[in-house]
Structure formats: structure tokens, C-alpha cells
Image 1 (cartoon, rainbow, N blue to C red):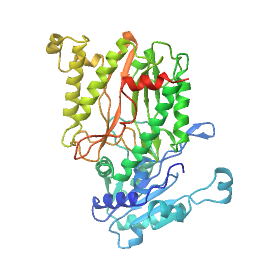
Image 2 (image 1 turned 90 degrees about the vertical axis):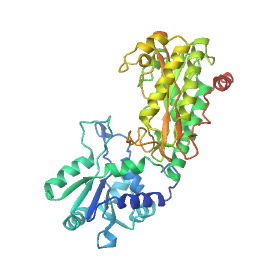
Image 3 (image 1 turned 90 degrees about the horizontal axis):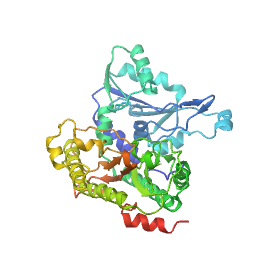
Length: 431
């Protein structure tokens, strides 16, 4: 475990809140993530399913959680199942959690080996009337590969077809959108590590370096500071690549006179940072680059001020879009007359700014979301306006991570340099 110990009260509290939303005589079932094959006999590095971690703190494969809040036997109200280790497994793959260790991490008193699961499940299913199953529900996500939870759900419905099946996702969505104090501290830790990586990159970047060399500097700093690595595939996009929104090849040479757009973030204790910065390869913005950069920075500062309790994603995006169009008019990218005559369904600003300005973040970099729910204290969003001029090979995005509070927005990324003078000053002393 790279991260510091997380107080089990976080997971106990999450289970307690979740349980309040379950109907009477219900059991909820959660599976850990699969180990995914990479090629041959190799697996991708393991990453726990976010809901499972949110409720248990357990980062181990082949684990199952049962929650039955009103079961007549108190010991059956929370049960965690783990794979039973043996001497051969330890020799080949290292340590697996003991029952006592899992109890200490999760705060669950009844931890059993996975060998007992089928018998215990049948007992709880006979008692229960409703079953809450967990699936990943994100509007923009689809996959041809069934998750462990999905395969489990299919099998369970065949074995127990007469039960009433319910969704855990809506309950967890509403819970996970509001971050607790502990979660905010973990996100802040991921951001602080990301800041260290950015400052390291500012000292390293110069004409002639390769994008993947910069990525190596970034990820070195992540791992050296206890992060598991990147929270998502990082973008290190120089020159024309900076205009490709999801450019992840990171294999070009950075040239004198270009900008580099970074979209990157450390993952710490499964919580994500998500930051974008744009810098000049040679350490100095030319006049055009500076004009565009300061346009985006002005827009971002105004946009952050709108991230307040009671605002909505729809109102916020409309406001920021109008703001960006106004900035583009100021520098002559758009004309006021053309904007007045534009098709509202095809606004002209989208030629240069084609993505959204904010998304939730937390255990997933694009965290679970109800886009219709007003901004509330405890939500954490990105704020990421940008501008992309393909014909000039200049793409600029500035992305900060903002906590919504009753007293206004709090910028968790305020210490990550973004002012022109600060960036140029830090790059001036590089080797």
C-alpha cells in the first residue's frame, strides 16, 4: 500500500448512509473488480472498482460485500468475503489480506473466506425479498466487456428469478457526488503530488525533448510521492497535437516556438487529480500564444466564480459558452454580427472551443454524475475552458479543480502555477 492509512470511519459511514436508502428485507451485493488480461499470461495493474472501494477500502481482487441492514442476525448485516491465501500463492504473488487486516481496513466485523460465500448467499437470499445489484452507470460510457458485477447479476437472476431486483447505482451516485472531509483531503493529496510533477516538468521542458520523456518525468514524480501513477492516460501534446482533445500518443519531439498542452493528474488512494496546463516549449510565450493564453485564463477566473451552491450545470455551461464567445469577439476570432445571426444549435464559438467546461471528479476522474442536480457544498468539479486553433497549431487549456462550499468556490489547485509570469519565471532557471 503506497498511500497512508485511511480511517475506517470513512467506509463505515459510507455503508451506514447507503443502508438507510435500502428497502426493507433487502440485500445489496458488490463485487470487486476483475483482473484484466493484458496479453499472454500478463495482467494489467489492478485497480479496484470504485463503489467497492468506497464502501470497504479494500483494494484486493476476488472480494465480495453483502449488506443486509435489517437482517435479524446482526452479524449478517455486513459481510465481507476474501480470497483465502495459501503458501504457494504467497510465494508466487505475495501477501494477501488476512481476515484481521480486512477488518481493520473496512471496519466490517464479519469477514469470511470466499469459500463460504455460496452458502451464506443462499441463506440471505431465502430471507430477503429485494436484491440491490451494482452496475456502472455513466451516460457517456458503454463497453462490450461485461464487468464482474454484470456477470454476477446475470447468474443470480437465473438462480433466484422470483426476487425483486433494484439498482444500487442511483443511491451511490447521490452519495459519491458529495465528498466528505476525508475524501477532500485525499483529492488534495493527489493534487499536491500533481503540482510537484508540474514544477518538475517546467524545469525539464526545452526544445528537442520528446513528449514521452516529459511524461516519464511526470510519472516519476507521481510514484516517488506515493501515487499509484496517473489517474488517466496523460496528455503531453506539443504543437499541432495540442489541438487534439484526447491526444495520448505522446511520441513527438517538442520544437522551439511551440506550446505544450498537459492534461494530467496523479491518483492517490484511488482518488484523482485532473489538471491541465499549457506552457511554451522554449520558456517564453510569443505574443499570439500569450494573447490566447490570457484569453483562456480570464475566462477561467470568471467561470470559477460561478461555481457556487445552487447553480446548475446547464446554466453554468451556457454562461461560460457566452463568456468564451465574448472573449473570441474581443480578439477578432468571431464577429459580433455573425454571432448575433448564428444558429443557436450550432454556435460559432464551438469551432474553437468544442468541449464542456466542467465535470465531477473523485474516485473516478469523470466521477458519477446527475447533471440535473444543482451544485451543492462538497461537490468537486473541474473548470477547464480552452481554445484550439488548428491552422495555427496552438491549443490551450487551463484546468483547475474546484470544491463547492457554502462560502463560495475553493480552488484546490491554486498552488499549481498558471500565470504567464510565474510559468516563464520558473522555466527561466531550467537546465
